[in-house]
Length: 105
Length: 171
Image 1 (cartoon, each protein chain N blue to C red):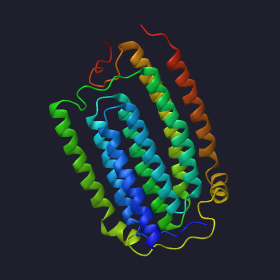
Image 2: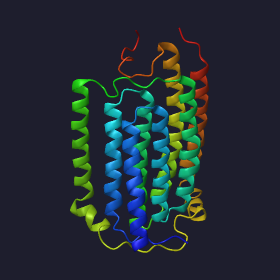
Image 3: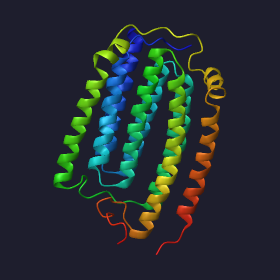
Image 4: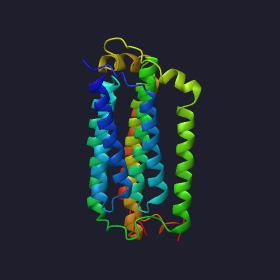
């Protein structure tokens, strides 16, 4: 038994936009690859929130299904991305994206 | 009304504050813990939106599995705090400018008349059991069966790829 949300759903969309923008700032401005990954997770979560809010608005479960797939893909992305990060760190001894800018150096 | 408005304000405040913490904290471990705060408050918002199954999944998959992975890598790499926290000069200014443009564009879209007509008005009631595991499973295993099976292959490939990348000797 969940409380019915009587808040207009546009607030959820605005909140999702704010979190997404914070994630964009994190990706563009931070130098550590790990924090960039976390910022990508922030953006994915903002999009998920938006999906669920629209799903609630239209009374359709398809948005929920999409969020489910986004979570699965995010898990795969994090596993591979962190493995790449570990490989870079072993090779170069840094996780700083400003220091890793040559494809072969 | 009052309780759900209060809960929304609380979760939204925690989410925004913690996500600012993620991108502006110096210590990566603190950033990871801030990210847990964001994930848990988004899970609370899912419950407010009658998505109980996704709220549970958010806690299990994101706050459980993915964050544990992040913390493992943090311990493995032993990262020092970044000395200049942000990228240098032009990249930083351009990044923030670009982010502002993205934000204005998103607000423009969300508040545009077509979208607003749907989402500003009264929230429609949903049938009982909306967003419950049973309802999601009914849709997932009928309409979305093939994408669901393909997802399992994707996860298998990701596992194999992670193992191969992490085991290979470089240089």
